[in-house]
Length: 480
Image (cartoon, rainbow, N blue to C red; front, top):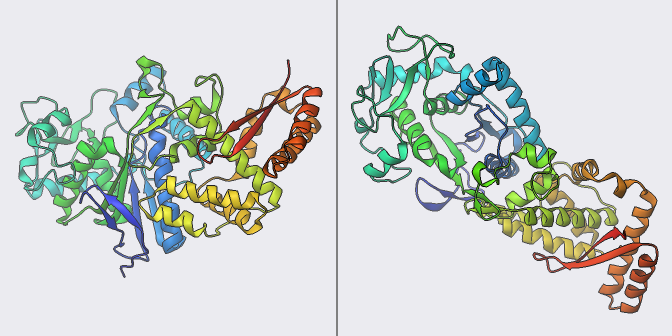
C-alpha cells in the first residue's frame, strides 16, 4: 500500500520537489551507487555516502527499520582495478578485498551505517548476461566484434533524466570511436577481456571470454535485490549522465517497465578550499588522509567533524570543503558534548528526533534547517532545560553523531601534552564553564577574575564568537 509521510524530495527525473510516496510502504527500497574499489575513497566520494545515510535514517524513522531496504553496490571489476592490481603485483581479488575493507572503515568513522545489502559486481555476472541477452532479443542491443552494445536510437525517449541534446550527449559520453558501432552514442554492455584481465563466458554466442561494461552492473544488482522498479536511486550529480541515463535505458528496455526508479536524487559537487579538487592543485584528499595524516591544515581530523562539514550544506548544493569548516564543526560538536554532559543525559537508541529537526529533513533533507533546530535546542539546554538537552542528544544520535564515539575520536587525536595532566584539564574546563555563566549573568567582575586567576596559573583563554550560533566559545592553551 502506498503511504505518504510528508517527505518531499527533489526528483531529477521530474525536475521538481515531489512528495515521496513509496510503491509499497512495507517495502521501501533505496539504491545508491557505491565505490569502485581500487584506492581510498576521496572526500567527494564520501558526500553521497553521508547524504544517503541520512536519507536511509529518515526512511527508517518514517516507515520502520524492518520495512526499508538500502542497497549500495561495490564495483570490483574495472580498468582502474586491473591497472592498480598489476602495479602493486597482487591479484585483483586481493586488491578489491583490501580496498573494500579500507572503505568500510573510513565510512564507519564518518558515522555512516552499512547498507542493508552490499552486492559486488563480480557476484552478479549471470544476471548481467541475462539482461544483455534480453536487450539483444528485443532489438535494443547488438553484438559486434566480440562486443555487445546498446543501440541508443532504438529507445525513443532516451535522455529523459539528463535532458541533454544529442550533441551534448555524444560529447558527454566521451564515446570511443569504433567502426563496429551503429551509432556514436551506442555504449558497451559487454566487451572482450584482454590477456591477464578477469573474464567470463560471454553472452549472445560470443566465443571470446569477456567482462561487463560499467553501466550494466547497477541495472543487474538493483533488479536482483530491489526489483525491476523500485523507489529511490541516488548518487552524485556527476553520475546523471551517462551512468544513470544508461542504467535507465538498459533496465526499462530489458524489463519493459515505465521507470527503473520513481525518484532520482543527486548530490552536488564538492570543491576544496574554493577550488575544484585536483591532485595537480594539491587539494585532493582521501577520507583516509584526513583521518590519519596531517595533510590538510597540518593536522588530523575526526570522522564526525567531517560528517558535520559535509552536512552543513543542503545536499543538492555545491559544497566548499575547508579546514575552517572542519575546525568549526569540531568546536560545535564539542559544545554540544559539553551541554549534554552537564545536563546529565544520554542519547537513547532508536529515539525519535526532535520534531523541528525531523521537519527540516522532511523538506528534501534540508540539513541546514535541521541544524538550526539543533542550535535552538542547545540554547534551551544551556539555560537549564533538561528535556531540550535530551532531545538534542537523541537528535544528534539520529543524525549519526554519536558523541561517545566523537569523544574517542578526539582523544585519539589529542597531542600528548594536552592530555598529560587530566586534573588540570578538568579544572580549566570547570573554570571556563563558570566564567561563561558569569558572562551570561553580566557579572563581568567574576568573569575577569576567573580569567586573571587562570592566567596566573599559566592558562591563556581565547574568546571567539561562533559564526553560526552567535554564541561565545572559549578555548585555552598553556603559555609558552
